[in-house]
Image (cartoon, rainbow, N blue to C red; front, top):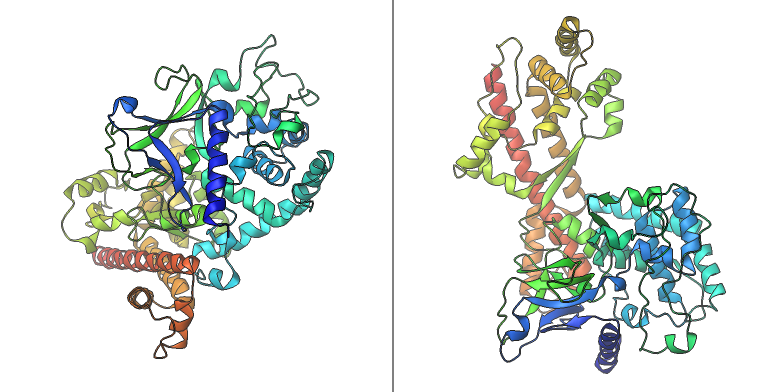
Length: 571
């Protein structure tokens, strides 16, 4: 671990690098904010508020952004990546990750001052030890992490390793003199996913007008892409390295690039050095915008960090942005942290495809599901629990919304909207899928007869998705779907508890650990002693899995109540 003095030198070099590349820090600074969070952006106290009357805290030229466009313009990477990109072997995210991999290893990289500031390791599950990963057994993240790591390893072996070695050889070797390792690629992948923003570039910036037709369909695979790096090797090694802007001339738009277009804005994922040091906060008053004309920031074609609070005060405070309304599953998987009592937490429930394939009349059911454009999985947000049967009478607003949105329809007029519809919190599209999967033979015949009524009266008409959903509900009702829902949630809860116990056991464990400071208490059990020596990765895993057990148990209770109500209505 670097000493405090080394960290200070590294930070000074980075701040100077930002300055010479046109980044402006206005009433903000970048500094360490604790060992667990690394660096962050902080407001800078000053006399008066004139310098921040517009709320702008930081301005970064778009030319400094690390995007797929920059990679395709790179003298070393560009020609190689353009061919891979054209053949469809890789996507735009891969280009940025490959760029980061190369620049981490490249001798005298012009991005060294920036890369030196980035974390060397991460706290996302891809970086967990086997013991730490075992804490996630039973959760969706456990399997997802294992599969993703295998996928990344295969991608590294098949495409990355030889390509990066070739590039480094042509460039004079790596910084360390050693070849690329899988951890280098894993590091670049984690840097991208923890720091990338979806940037709304002006259309004219990404596709500037040129002498040629911007929408030309001519083959550009042999076009030499201008380098975005300086070739002056004598100055690259110092910290006084200015990144060259992306050339604006002579670019033609490929078919792949045209898919990014959305009106006058082109949304591109990339890294913005400086702004990407902002950490996540729940209640934030700071956001970022792109300034094409420079009328807000004073810098044309820039991205700026802006606070809604123009008078920041004289106290230094961390400036956070929102990464979005994400549950702990997504936060831990992508960013490596969790939020206790996360209001945006959710539970994922899915019906296994292999179970459908082995179900009676699977071919017919699969056809009906396809006609409905059905999804066999759904997300159950935590906030739904505040409006169900087990939450009390505290949400008339949602009751009205759910009642209006209930899609039950009866051809015969005999099947009425059920009594529980006003508190039905489960997504209707997922319930429609479960109704279809649970159909019995005589119910399938009835669905077929109902749909034939439509086509017999109009031979050219094809049943719509809503027609099929209505026919299934008319034929089967909700009883089979609710029983299937109870089974899915019960299995989900048992899967979570199988390896690590109940929600209550996780809670007791966390409470004991938070109250005790004696890590060698002989009165503790062997299991407790194990957890007393755990790091934050395992701690985050326990909080995440406890939240999943909480949600599974509460949604199971809701489903059981619905099943009981439906059974009463049917009797």
